[in-house]
Each structure stands twice: as C-alpha cells, then as structure tokens.
Image (cartoon, rainbow, N blue to C red; front, side):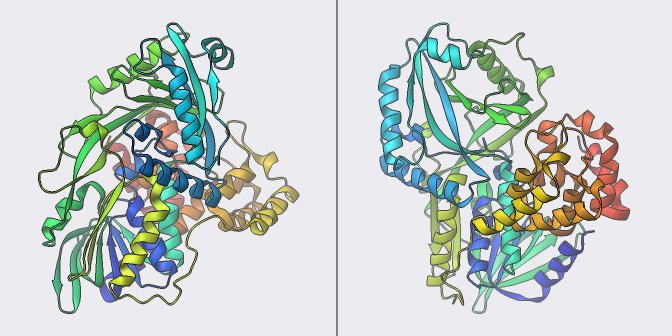
Length: 535
C-alpha cells in the first residue's frame, strides 16, 4: 500500500530537478505547490513526516496578529489581515471566521473600552472583511457564555479572526498533495545529510529513514525550508545568512468540550500573555504557554501542565476543576522566531513577531526561509516562486493558480450528488458535522471518489474508530494517495484522531486493526507495534 512513496524514492535518485525543497512544513509545502503548478520540476523531502514538527503544533488559528498592535507593528498587522482574508476567500470550507470572546480583569494594563477601540481599528485594517467587533459588559459576558468566570471582570469585547476546521497538519499536507498533483516528487522520512554546490548545481546526499538506503538528489536550486532546523542545515551546506532563529515553546492541552458554542474564549493569563480556549470538534484545546528554549526539540513539563490548568480553572466556572486526568492529548512545539545577525537582539524576545524572512544566495542559487506563520503561507509560496524565477528557472505556466478550493460549480455538483444518495443521513451520531460538508472540506474534487466507493458499498461510510470522524473509504483513499508511512502519520497528521481520542481508546478500538490492514497490508502488525511501542 506504499507504492507511491517507493516509486517517488526511485525518481528522486534517478532524475535531476529544477528545485529541491528540503522540509515539508508549511513553508516547504507552499513553496513546492507554487513552483510545481507553474511547471517547474520540483522535488521535496522531509526527514520526518510532512508537517511532522512545528507545523503540527499550532493553535489552528489563522489570525491577523492583533497582539502586534500593542508593539505598533501596524504594517505587519495589515499584511497579516490581508493574508487571513485571502485564506478565507480561497478556502471557505476550511478556514472559517470565528468569534473571539475576550474577558478583561479589573486592574489589567489597559481598560476594556480602550482595547475595544483597538479591535475596531483591527477590523478597519482588515478592510471590514469580518463581522464588526462588539463591546461586552460583565453582565453580557455572563449571559452569552455562562462558563466564563466574570468575578473581578471589568468587561470585554468580541471580534473575529479565523481558524482551521480540521487540524494544521492536514492543511499543510493538502499543499503537499497539490504539489504532487502538479508533478512534484515528494517523499517523507528522507533525511538530508548535507548538500554541496558545483558548477552543475546542487548535489544533496540523503538517507531513506525507512530502508537506510543513501543516494544523491541533483537540483539546480536548493530551498532550505527546514523550519527550526534552517540554521543547522545551512551549516551542512556551507551557507551564511543574515538571519537566524531563536525559539519559544508553546503547549496546548486538549480536553473534552467545555462549551457548545463555536467561539474562541480569550483571556490574558497570569503572565499577561494571550490564553485561548479553542473549539476542536468534539474537544477543546487550551493554551498556550510562551517559554524561551534553546533547542527546538521540546516536551511538555509538569510546570507547563500546571500553568495551563491553573489558568483555565481560574477563568472558567466548571462543575469541577480540570486535572491532568482530564487531558485527552497534548501539543508541544517550538515557534521559530527570526532575529537578524549572528548575535541578534534578544533583549525583548517576547515581543518578536512571527513574520518570515527569506535569505537568498544568488551565486549559489540557494534560498533559506526563516520564521513565518500559517496565516501568511500563500504569500510565502508566491514570494518563493518569484525568487526562483530570478535564479534562472523558466516557468511554462507563470500565471498558474496554485491554491484554493475547486470552483463553486464543482462544489454544487458534489453537493447535488451527495443529496441524491442521502449521504448526510449516513452520518454517525458521534460526528460533529454532517458528512457532505466534511468530505468536501477535506478532499475537494477528490471527494467524488468517496461518493463512488459508498455507492458501490454503503459499508464504506462506516466509522472504523468511534469519535474519530474517519470513514472506511477515507482510510482506503489515504492508503492510495496520502503517503501514510507510519501509523502516527495517519492518526496525528492526516487526521486528528490521536488529538481527540485517548491513546488507550485508540488501541482498544476494534476498527484500528482493520485500518492498519487497509493502510499497510502485510506490514499492518509491524506498524501497529511500532506506534504503540513508541509511547
């Protein structure tokens, strides 16, 4: 069931590419999709799974950076608001407007009315694309969201940004899949051992993590999109740049759904930083922390859990306080923050924004992408394609549109076919939304293939894992099209099953064994053991 990856590995070793992208996070994914759609011959590798590091640990928010208004970075806020609007227009089923319901305690550094005026400016800077902000009295907060503890509250406000209905890693993978649709040769678990430049271009030595095989990939241009490991890979390829990364650790705890309302509850934590309660289907995601770390490889500590739990218990009126036993899953990632120069100004690192930076070595035809956030990803893709063209790569289709959902007529036809076959009536009672909308959002035009499978055999519309919101036919399609190499790839990144179902419940699910057989064939038992033995 892993023929796609096996065939791509052979092509990586035997062909020469216009561009090799190293790193399959959001920056690498949009770079590959943008370049491949324009007709460049593109390869992409990642030493883990696609979106297997920073890009799977976000808050699932696509926001315009309202917090940067406090540091007067109005240009950045304007740019991010426009990027958010672009994402919402391009992916209306995936990137949705959501209301942020913010509570301000008495004695906070700014009064609620002053902050509310800031949200009006924020709305204006976003061209009024979202619903108008509202000022909220403590009484109004209590009426509309009774779970919020309004004791000592001086008021609040409500404004809009956007969030990903599915998870961040799934969103990133869809760009990888789009790039492959345009001819990109991509493979996960392929580690770059270093690259050397000659008159004929770049030779990158890589190792297949699954088989241990080593081989070379040849390309004219090399793009370092290694996320937090950009500096590390530049050392192996002899590149000097004007930027570097420092890291901030953020964690989230996922618990059973705390409120039925589809809105983000926003507070200022004890340390003064923004703190969110974010809807995640049948669950709620709580966080985040902001802790400076020296290494991008991070873990959730007891202190992290204590901070999140204490803050949420103090800000919500719960029947009983949340404890570690209530935690379904955890997220932990290092945000790569960009600083200039070798020393860098780290005196106020908490004020550093998530803006990206691109360093280009025109002589060596080498690009390094630093920082960035999901909100700005479409701009990054276009920016990289523009730079690669200046490096001498000719595009057969320079004006190709490389992002966005299929057109309204395609969606209308899918919805029509789904209604005729009664697809929504097949939705499992445990699901958080109807099947028609969910399948369209995840697969776009490829959702027609799922309809065909269900028509041929209605059992294909059954859930294999309770509360997982994944059908049998979706798993079959994942095996064919989504390069699921390890069980974790499917449970954590192609889906969000491991984020919303406890590990012991996943292991006990009768359908997981069948899912493994669909995904891995004869290797099913080995992949099962690999996942559960690596707890």
